[in-house]
Length: 88
Image (cartoon, rainbow, N blue to C red; front, top):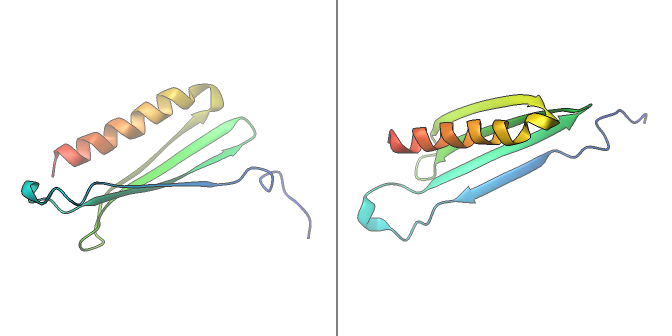
């Protein structure tokens, strides 16, 4: 097998589940899942917000740019996730 430039750059999967012990809120627990792919000085962050109770995707999105833009890309994705959570 021939190696490609992306073989050396692993895809990262990130998952965080909200605290399901807060039953007083009446909200189903949420799961944030996503990945980060970097190649040749570019990065793409993909994320989705999932309702754990029924598996429904409440929001999904992606953002990308150069590795120098990583902080701005992260902020954009986090802001979109926060907006989706507030809209519930």
